[in-house]
Image (cartoon, rainbow, N blue to C red; front, side, top):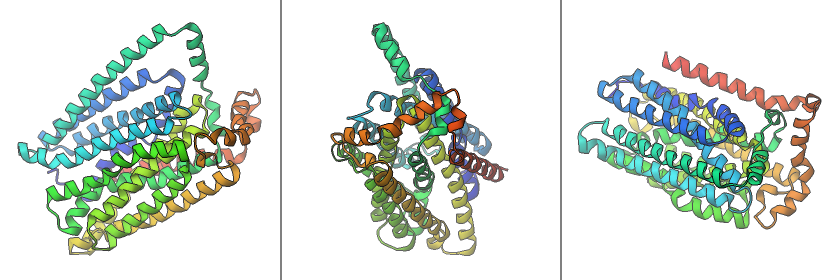
Length: 441
């Protein structure tokens, strides 16, 4: 409908991840400093306005207007997830954390599943491709209304709380920005994992419907519903997985399984003619296991007063990787289409990249597993009953960043390696924006 290339489509998809390469960090700092209520209102407003502009752009078939709408949508969508996870991580620090985050992820996956499955039927029902975008705008408007209800409820809670409780809550959430220099090495390994497998998940979800259509010869409706299978397993697995983590632990084990499943699914979908539903279900299992493992692990190793910033960096790393991978995959698709005449093999280059990317993410996940076993007394693998014992073994290590960050001579405690992940994050951020600008030009 817009008459654009695969590379331009990749750039359009990456507008959301591009603006969220830095915004979640800023949003996390803001949330840690000022709370979640104002941030959630701003985020839902931007999401609603952005989707309104996108919906309007479909009437004019304007690529540039759609890009503007996607940017505004991205400004809100990146922050709202940080808000949600920070709220849950603050209220459910110990037992119950995995289950509550599991419910949040499940709700998101149900919405994605229904969205992917109904886009084509809605378009055909109204004989207009923009109808699906207008349906999305209506859902966003409802979400904005729900957020207003949340704000009213929080104000009521604050009015009813005792002065002592308010003091405890404020002290609990008092944030020191110096803490980012003292985040643990295992945290940064999880960030690298977010950059790799997180980007792989996001980017593949952008192309899976077209992949099923071109490689396996499905029509639009069948391709859309087949692709939506990639979102269905988290609906059933994640709630159980939340309970599993609380009672059995094994977060790092599941992270390794998740990355291995992602790699296997890319091999099946890219280089075999096995029924695509098999590969999509395996991909869906990866999508179910990975995010909950990563988010709950971060919530366990970071103090509550820096959790928003830590989750913001996690989201930013995923979006930096997604921006880069979206554009690389778009270029590989165009190159594959140019050199391979039959559409069945036009995705070979892109899928080979996904396989290699998955192998890299598996290597990183194994590193997280080993570091947790050797340096953290298996804290991330521990269940709710054994967590106190694991915490006691690393108690001095966990409390060290707070002491260093609050010391008058805090710079003396910042080692050379503390700067490396921050510099790497800045460099990959710059690369993502350069690539994004080149493809939009």
